[in-house]
Image 1 (tube, protein in one colour):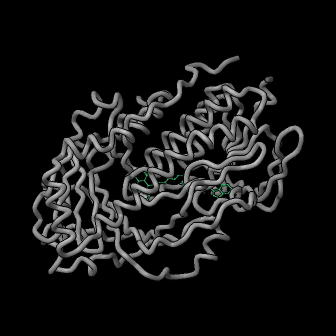
Image 2 (cartoon, rainbow, N blue to C red):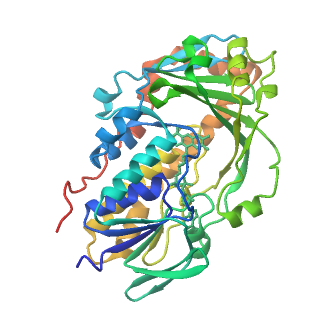
Image 3 (cartoon, helix red, strand yellow):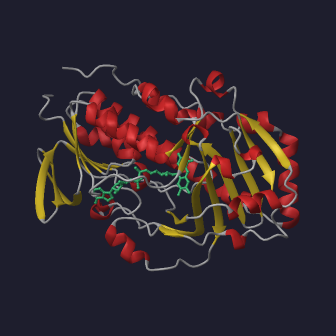
Length: 414
Ligand SMILES: Cc1cc2nc3c(=O)[nH]c(=O)nc-3n(C[C@H](O)[C@H](O)[C@H](O)COP(=O)(O)OP(=O)(O)OC[C@H]3O[C@@H](n4cnc5c(N)ncnc54)[C@H](O)[C@@H]3O)c2cc1C
């Protein structure tokens, strides 16, 4: 296959799209990434990257760029919200030896900036901002992608189109094979606070997971320990605002607010240190959570989906970005292996991902239910976790963290 024929368009420059662009460039593709945003801004806050994801990032040669920004947590402390006592401590120090790749916490902006810098440094990757993919047409020679750049409607011809355009994917909508995501009756509240403003025990390189009735709280240091990332997840039966508007904008209806979720962390259910923490941030981002049941159905011809566009993921297993990163590696490998036949390559990619992604979605949903238990059920859960112990709880993730990335070529073939 000639270099000109191996042109792939990726819609979206999130974690999925940028990782895919880097992986595809490794396998000799020329990649155009079309991103609707006029500028790439820091969205979200902290993100945990488990070894199945860091393995891919390291294989893409991003280790040196990422290392200054990451923090390797020593353990996950699972805490009882009311008593403030540790239920169990899942050790992470041994993760690099056990899984062959590290467990990292990073600010999402740092991860995205690293991916963007690597994409800009790669000869075969072109990143076009302010370029919103609106439509595509499949034909004998591949696919023509229509995108809006300012007032102009432009076209890009390619061998394949990869929809990495997130939860409200235009590529998925255009393919007509995906049901729209549904509000998961949960809202994530996200904030960052200077580490100096939180209790000393919360500045340590640990992930804290507090389990309370109907809510849980996660926090860990990011930006080399200078900030603490806080996420509180609460039940909310009805979505505020009009999600249909959000779909037209192509972004989930997240909003930045001064009034945070502190009033939901009641004294009778939450101990003083946890309440002090949620009272600390001056600004919060409110992030409604969406999911879609059932495996992603796959594309048609030279078009496929990756990341949240393919399989929105509830954040109770910290795997949405990890799955996007895995997708990117498998996709690039399949396009490399199947040479001249992109449709076959994309169906092979979808087949390779379907079962694993469905399992992760299922475990994540189950975690969401278990985390939010109340009363005697919560007490039984805590007893069970304590009896199992941290090592056994880590071993339960072996199927997830031991995932082996396909070998991508080290150098771009000429
Ligand atoms: C509270 C919370 C905590 C989380 N924590 C973790 C964690 O610890 N670990 C983890 O692995 N995951 C975590 N996740 C999940 C993770 O953030 C997402 O799964 C991941 O960011 C999805 O990346 P993506 O690139 O698929 O989508 P997105 O990040 O949504 O990127 C899509 C991109 O496409 C662009 N776009 C949209 N429409 C178009 C269009 N028509 N044309 C061109 N561009 C378009 C968008 O502007 C955006 O840049 C968490 C999620 C939440 C909500």
